[in-house]
Image 1 (tube, rainbow over the protein chains, first blue to last red):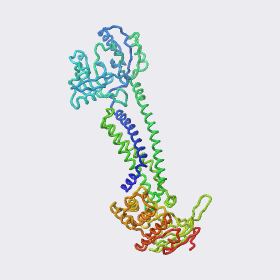
Image 2 (image 1 turned 30 degrees about the vertical axis):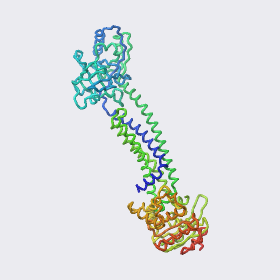
Image 3 (image 1 turned 180 degrees about the vertical axis):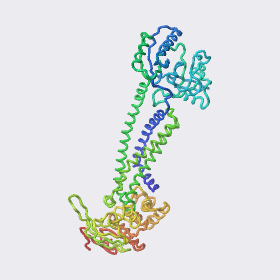
Length: 394
Length: 221
């Protein structure tokens, strides 16, 4: 019977082309949506790599006009000690603008053995940064004061960059070069990947640089790890202390947990919009499919009547129509899968192959389910056709 | 072979009741070639559909090969039709998207048989109706007479004991009609197939063993 149905479909290939195209387009749209959802879901399942609860971020403008690096460094170290003297403050860290959940990005490139690694997130941080947000160290150590006198500039890299450059080998103690190949950078540690742009996205490769003495001129953010009893009253007190220490500076206090919520919302809204649009498209396709199948059945009433006359039961007629539609879907899916499989092969968007393969599998299952649901009712209608009536109509 | 006792067929709508068959009692013996005649709308095709288990009578009793059919399920009826009955229609009812050989093997698809067996039996059936050379053609490439011969091949491919033919020569000229009639007579004579044929053609009807006339749903001769 299967070979018979295949022959029938093949001989009607022109009529079936439209249906095959419709299923193919739906598959490609669904594959796109499922790739996005799978990618986001897998990212969501990954650990954050740092703590954001009870970490406040202070955005400030540098109030000092002096050009002396030592004076500026001393000023901010004093401010750090002033803040740490408050019982609710556990740690204070100065950082570049690309702190967790900020809208700022700073990218750089590094070289190793002649290979260029570009689009690496570049974080300029101090010795207290790890403690402030509880970064997870996988290898080596974090920065300390001795690094200021190191012969080669020390850096930490994240596990993604370590994997890309060194594979399974240890990275600590090895060197990379900066973009211009002027400085040798010594890797002193590897940290777990961090999701600094929200729950649904990874930042890819990252490098952490220690702030140098001149950095306080341009740094404008500090992260403050506070205790559980740090409330609004403390926030007000903190503001007063900061305002008292940093005359004429613009000061803004925010909470990383709130920034995370905003970041996630900003990420989810387009995804939801895309999913709604895809949902409408699927409803459209389902209705179209339903209509085409219904139309086909009405066009084939004579054939259905004949099949019933020569030995087909109502159930087998229904099964035949559903099977025919499933075979058509399979043809569409074979073509669709050919295009979809190019994504993991070409590593489109530098996304892991498993994301595309999972999306491919889910899309195939979804299309089969959709086609099955859409063909069941027309199939039942076909089974209900009275052979005597259908043969007479013809 | 076929026993009809007081067969009635009534079509009802909200306002109208139409009596298509009115207490028809008829016996068709094994190996008989029976023709049914009557004006259009007298119930000939309805009677044939009831004999072929394509339609249910509103009343009366139908037995085929001593077996009552009113209690059979849809699946059992389908199996019964497939094994016992072959159909020939005025408008051939060939599937235009299938080649002649594929059309002929259709009834065998609803039995357990291999593709090789099906092809072999279909080729033999086509040979019997003189169309071996048209196996790979599509129905649209055939003449009316050839189409009806394909339909006959399809009807006999499963070796049914009964053939029900609804105006098999109705769409054909007299020469073609005679050819088809010769094939049917040959089947009846050589294979012992019981044939019930509905026709408008008195001349064709006279060539059968017995003629039954219907008028307004009732048997008049």
